[in-house]
Length: 337
Image (cartoon, rainbow, N blue to C red; front, side):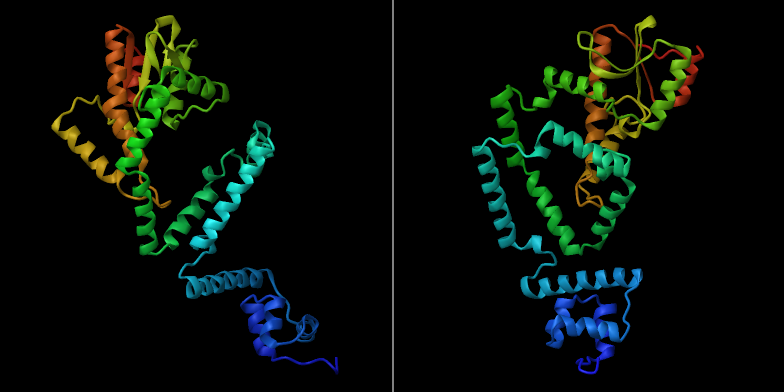
């Protein structure tokens, strides 16, 4: 150790232990070789704890961010236009090459997609990582870290994606291909989607709806859930009792408005309030689509279901809370059309 070049202990400790400088960065700072840096770290017994590693990582990320801001005016390399363009061009060429050679990437195949879903499921307990509490918290935290300017820029980007022109283009494309503005409304598409959800058990239901289903099942063992009758009722019905030929819709979730929509003054005020909220941004920086969905559910879909049941003279009932359904089960109330 006598021939070793001794470096400033305080500076070396601060840079290596507290700020997380790499060996390479330290060689550039001290103008010495890697072995000299390593020898000094050993000589001064500078040991990194788990906490030091975490702190060092934060320092490196912040330093990198500041360097990018000074040089390019952005805090992430992916925000540099030249980088984005280069990556986009590289991806385009790669996809073209694969297409020319007739190659499908593994994760682009059904087998690959299934393997990816199973891998995520094993690790996180769900086939979609964005559904995990950890991921949601991370997205919320990342959104809160954004400056007001970044949030404003993201909002503008979202608005541009939802312009009248882009919507009209979407409608025209659908009309050319499917002779309808919204191909998702085609009976064959809806039927295929229904069969897929039924096959995969992917119907979205609320906790309360599941509880209601259990109560009905106890009373009516032949109960069917998420039932569809393309001839008489081309919608996914919450519950159906074959022995009574009875269709049941449970409207307990807030998107159903708490009562049948008839366009009263108070209901119009509620819809206006939902419209205003749909223009707000959530923590992901996206518009609150749930309110737009609620407006369509309450004022369009539910109304269509009600009118279809009436036109086809179905044995059909709807309930807006669990209490009224329990009364029905007990034979104390009949809400049928």
